[in-house]
Every structure is written in structure tokens, then in C-alpha cells.
Length: 206
Length: 206
Length: 206
Image 1 (tube, rainbow over the protein chains, first blue to last red):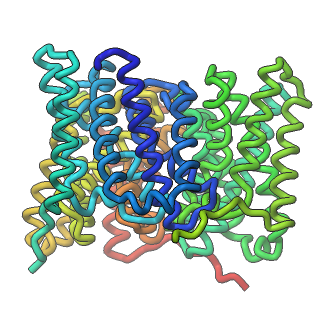
Image 2 (image 1 turned 120 degrees about the vertical axis):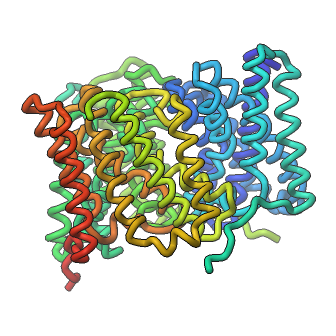
Image 3 (image 1 turned 30 degrees about the horizontal axis):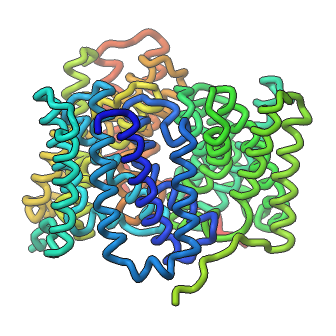
């Protein structure tokens, strides 16, 4: 799982899932075909673009490797035409999204560590890779980003990123060291969905 | 047209038109003078700043060459004081905006190709140069970006960017190779306005 | 005041104040704990991150030096639990925010000049360092950025940035050359608050 091609496949799978989620949200807002594909592109690749700018990897992968853009465009376009079927698959989409969050957070954290970022910065960069696309999607659609309002989503991502950093700090770079954080993110996210966990909200002002 | 100074003049003309369009939108929202100039600056230079960050050209031209910022500020300020006259010139503004889109997309795509981006990435970067400022303008003003909602605008930009990439791929770098895509973008955009063409919207959910 | 450690302390103090301001705004919108800390992080570090990307300082300080992220997180978290007390301190918060604007604008402009940006670009980059976090905070919370709508805020920042550039141009790099622009920003901002100064709004369309 630490080979470049495994990272690539994990990345592209996450990109496709996130593009479908972005496209679905854009369809709900009645954007046109271009708008749906654009929001899908931002949802899928926005987090990785920000990460690449932060770590100085220019041009960002989304522009340097055509497979990223084409994957996002195809997944968004497919969602545009197939979304009535998707809307019956709410749980499938949520599970795929949790898997995408897990994969993209882990690969993002590893790339940030490989680029020489210190641990705290790499964990932040990994989390931004995971949640940044969703923040961009919601901003484009005129919403306060859902990840800031409720549910355990970013916290799951951050926990996984920290676990990656700990493993790498202790010299563990093998498949298990990357699979364990991904499983952690996925499980925390799914359990949070099943139990409707949320982060605490502010105490009322007196 | 492939000389640096021709690229500069085309760029600055596009900057002025986009700044006026951003300033006009900010005036409608009753922003103050600073807000109008800031939104004009973002509308004019936001797309190019993002492109420069993507291709690794730091500092971006908007910061490295004072003529860009001053052009945007003067055009925005002029719009602030003269806008009642502008509002009678709706078609003039739309035609100038179409010309700005054509010029900025073509120069953006050429810069991305010159920076070594592969064709797909360079076309995306060129389109982002063309539409990025308008997206930033609408986000600052609390709107879902108009380019995602209706009309043929980004698609015209992308078509022109693809034509630039095709010409350059076949070794054509002369004025015609740059003028033809610019004309394509301008004509598609103007015909779309005249005919009220739109991209398809999603099928209704059943 | 021109030593690295003085710049660091000024920077971190500004970060803490801006994080508290971002967290307070997020609490008003009833975001959860993660959302409050995230908005505080963006308000505190967003301007500096954009400046670092513009001047090519990657990874940005917010990711390269853990003290920035931790300062922002602690200040945001403290605001989350203590905000009922803060809300009785409106003037304290406004004064701290003016001080933060002064410190962060001056350090931002100096960093941009040191990175080789020409004067106009460095003043813009310094102002963006000062106001960028607030713009990001408001966008995340679904508001048109307050800095674009009313009050003398960005203009105070820009005036201080210009004064820094003038001093540096004439070879003055000592503490006074940095303290004077900071005092200028602080005084203009506070007087504008006391007198309810605003920038002009557009003339009515006829």
C-alpha cells in the first residue's frame, strides 16, 4: 500500500466518490451540466490542490496528471445523468464517502510528511486534503460548510492523520501503518453516522 | 500577437473589463468604495492569481507587476463614480466582458503551456484564468457563481483553451493560432447571449 | 522589533486575537466545537497562508511552525468555553482586534518586501495578510465580508502597509520604522470606530 501505484489507485477511488458527492449536491441546487461537473471537480480535487500548494508541489497533481481531472469529470457527469438512481442509495453514498475520506486523508498526510512538513502541519494538511473539497463544494453552493456545523467528520479525518504521523514517526511505513488509520477514519465516521454523534455546540450565551 | 508586449496589452485590457464587471456587481450590493475596488480587483485578477499559483509562477503577476493592480483599481474606481452611465450600456458591458473572457483565457492557456503543464491541465488552468475571477466575485457577494448556473460562458472559455492546446501541439505559435481561439470564445459567447443558449440542467428527480 | 523573535511574538499575539474574533463569530452562528476552532484557525492564519503562497514561502508558516496552529487552536478553544464572558468585553475585543490588524499587517508587509516583492505588490500582500483571515471567516459563515461593506478597516491596514514600504524604501529598518506604521493602523482604526467613520458608498443609480 506504500507503493506509488497503490497510492494512485486509492487517490483516484477517493476522487470519484467525492466528485459524485459534489455533483449530487450541485444537482439539488439545480445547477446546469457545467456547474455540476465544476462543483464535482472542486469537491473531488479542491482539497488535494490546496495541499499541493501548501507543500509546494506545483503544478498540483490535479493539473499535472490528467487521470485526476478525467476521473472527476466522468464521475460527475455520470452522477448528472444517473442521479435519480443514486438518490435511492443514500447509505451507499455515505459509506463510499466515508471510504473516500479515509483514503484521501491518509494519502494526503503521507504526501505532506514526504514533502518534509513537521508533524502538526502534516496532520493539518492531511485533514485539509480530506475535508477541503467538501468545504469548497458548500461555499460554491452558498452554504455554510456542513463539516463545520455538525457530525463527526473532520474529527475522524484528523484522528486518522495523527495516527499516520505517529506511525511514520516510529519508522513504520508499511501497508498496515497506512491501512490502520484508514480503517480508524472509516469506522469512526460510520459509527458517528449510525449513532448520530456530533461535536459539542457552544453553551448558550447568558 | 505572440510577443510579450502583445500578451501584456491583451491581459491588461481583459483586466480592465473584468474589474468594471466586478465593481458593477459590488455597487449593486451597496458595498463601500473599498469593497467595490476590492471586488473589482478579485474579479479582474483572481483567475490569474490562481493560475500563477498553480503553475508555480510566484509572486503572481498581479503582485509582481504593478500595472495589473493599478489597472484593476483605476477601472474599479472609475466604475464606482460613473456606474449610472454604465447601466445604460448593458450590451457594451456584455460585449466587453466576452472580449475579456476571450483574451484572458487565451493568454492564460498559453502561459500554462509555456510553464510545462500537460494539455488537459493547461486547458483547465486557462479556463480557470478566464472564469476564476467571476467565481471569486460572486462568492464575495454571497451568490452562487453565475457561471455555474446558466448560460454558455465557461464552456466557451474551455472550448477556446482546447483549441489553443491543439494549435500549440501542432507547432503553431503565430498570431493566427492565438487569434482564432479568441475569436471562437467571443463568437460562441455572443451567440449564446443572443440566442439565450444554456447548458442542460439535471433531469427532475422522480 | 526587527529581530525574528520580535516578529514572531507580534505575529503570535495577532494570531491569538484574530482566532478569538473568528471563534466568536462562529459561536454566534452555532457551529460545533470543531467548526469554531476551524473558523478561528482560518481567521487567524488564512491571511498569512495566502501571503506565504503569494511570496512563494512554502510550506506556509502556519504549517511549518506548530506554534501558529497551536496558538490559534488554544485561543479558539478558550473562546468556545469562555465566550459568555467575552461578550461583555466588546470594546476589549475591538481594541485587541485593531492591535492584531496593526501587528499582522506590518509583519506581513515586511515579509513580502523581504521576499523581493515590489512596493505595490508588497503593500497589497501586507493588507491581504491583515484582512484575508476576516474575509475567509465571513465566507465560511455565509456572510458578505464585513470588511467590504462598512467601516475603515482595510483602508487603515493599507495605509500602514504603504508607510512600511516608504520607510523601507528610504533604508529605515529599525524598530521605529515598524512601530510607526503599526501605531498609525491602530489609531486610524480606533478613531474610525469611535467616530463611526465609513468609506463612501456608491451614488444612487438614477
